[in-house]
Amino acid sequence: MKHPALPVSRAALAVMVVSGAIALAACSRPAPAPEPVRAVRTLTVGTDSAGGVMEYAADVRARVESRLGFRVGGKMTRRSVDLGDTVKAGQVLAQIDPQDLRLGQESARAGVNAAKVQFELAEADFKRFSDLRQQNFISAAELERREATLKSAQATYQQAQAQAGVQGNQAAYATLVADAAGVVTAVDAEPGQVIAAGAPVVRVALDGPRDVVFTVPEDRVAFVRSLEGSKGALQVQPWGGGAPVAATVREVAAAADPTTRTFVVKADVARGAGLQLGQTVTVKIEVPRTEGIVKLPLTAVFETGGKTAVWVLDDKSMTVQPQPVQVATADGNAVVVAAGLRPGQEVVSAGAHVLTPGQTVKRYIDPHRAAAALGSVSTPVRDGASGAGGAGVAAAAR
Picture 1 (cartoon, rainbow, N blue to C red):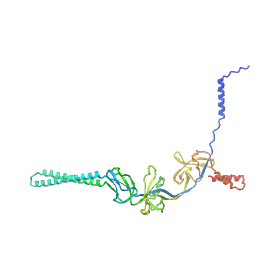
Picture 2 (tube, rainbow, N blue to C red; picture 1 turned 135 degrees about the horizontal axis):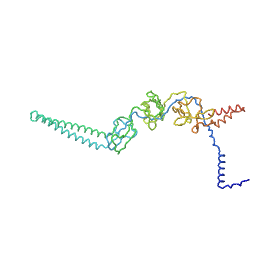
Picture 3 (cartoon, rainbow, N blue to C red; picture 1 turned 90 degrees about the vertical axis):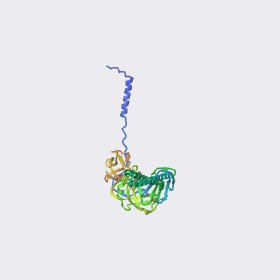
Picture 4 (cartoon, one colour; picture 1 turned 60 degrees about the vertical axis):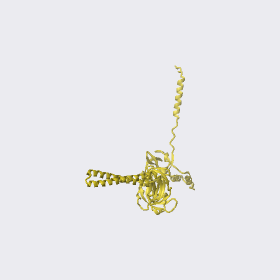
């Protein structure tokens, strides 16, 4: 007995069609593309030597450089020197308006005269009362009061004299003079400007010893400090030409500059060396060569997790893994590795920024070098020989 077919609704039919389409789409979803095998340049870690000559740009400065200013305030009326002028000891450099200072000096002199008159009057009175006391016309207490008045007048007179001396010095300070011979290296004020007491007006590099001043990075400061006091440890070469001059490290800064993080070094040069103030020179420091160190190009190192590392290639699986290293210093375009690698390891020298741990790579083969290597083979080779030739090309491209 056949049962009649049950009617199918349109909604149920639509659900069945959609479910079937989803199932077919899931079955036909493409697999994710495999990670590409990247070509990298590699090199084999070996020992090398570091050393040579370190060069730094420097300038010649005076050992002593004074910032001269007025010891009193006022309006500057004249400046007698300009930048680069040579000055002598006692030469007038600038002057301020002395009118107020002269009035103060005259007032102090008048005060001295008044105090002098009072002192002389008290002195005469004391002499008269001393005579009266000897004749018993006055009491001892009265004579003591006259003596106190005399001492007070004398002290006032001395005070007025000292104040007059101060005012006289103030008037003399209206003229700025050079303390010693030298060269004007900076001008900090112009005529018409109101100058405060102590404000710099001109800067004078005094005649005397000369220093070559330059800065060194933190990794070199210990070596430069070890040269302190060694005669002729540095060579100074003027940029404008001329024979090199020997110099001696005199001072190394105890702290680094907060902006550049470098240390200031001052080296002493002889006065007769022919170097001019402000001249630019090159300082050359010879560094003894050190053998048996590991050097890598800058492109081989990268930073991961706050540490410096390199990619080490496993020759069997052709995969790379990060290897933390300790960098001692820089040597030109290379870094000196203090720890973390051993000779014979193969590291990635180019392409380190696009790699991930465990990634499969292949050695980069220069097409031009590969073509040249194949072109040099003039006779057919057997299958076994062809494998050896291919390995040689790969080794040459490392």
